[in-house]
Length: 413
Image (cartoon, rainbow, N blue to C red):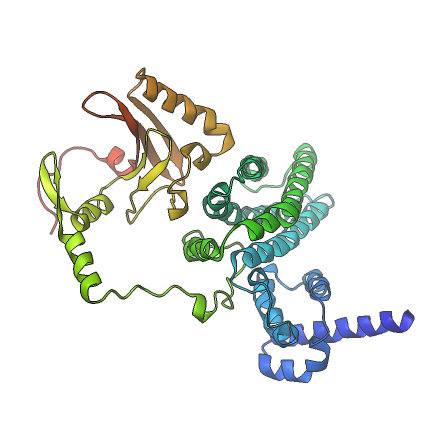
């Protein structure tokens, strides 16, 4: 047993040395060749332990992002070439799991900063805590991808309950970040009372975030792997860059070249039919437009629109260049109630119920977000016989318009 422990310790020390040398600028191929015998027997747990040790020794958390990609590359030759897709870098589940690993490091770093603040309550330490919390808040991108990409596809397999619960927990976590940053305020040294409050708030926040990781790893991801098709995963993969990633750069092993979607090359009769379809005019109330013209019109509107039919199903959203609220193709066919966080679902349902029975035709709200003044309106859509045919959501950034004064009668040069 002691010999096994000694060998494992030596292996860890060698791998740690290899990663540090790469971090310090040595060529990856040179280091890999020198440590080939050790790298071929390393386990994922050992690598995780080593990365945690490097962080404890002062290596910036940001650099672990690079090391994660490096250690996968270093051990690739020792891995089974027939790995399931979710174990290949680039697959959405692999990326989610990589983010969770790095989240643990960020949580540890924030916890250590709070611990130091108990002994040194200074403006410098408060600024360090603020930086750690801002880094922690970046994990919201992980939750947004779950909500807008993974959840919609799971709902189509009748897996919606856990998704709704998780979304509610996401919002609790967001409130936790906001509360702690508000407690810090401008960044001056905090009082003893504030310090105690920050400790309590972080303890609850940390527990909630770690529990969420556990739920993802043990429930959400295994179910998603079982229920979603490769086509689903490819669709999720295609839209992930619209949201971005938390702490990681997405890998490139998956999808493999033969799995990547190639543009359809229509030829002969197919091309002719497609061109005919695009050019065909559709008679509208006040004019005739082709499909391409309708698309151009909708993508150039100075507002964002989303159309929900009479069955509360999302059928369309406009893709304008500066869209305020992100939408993905995954929401098409999704119940609109599931497109909102749980705490606002009652409000959405109330509006739709009023539209349906005819007690309301318009509902409007305005909020301030990221320096923008956003006006949001919902309109009931009815046919010539006053039958309810769905709802139209219209959102617009009114920040610049609200600031206008006087008159402008001339064109800018």
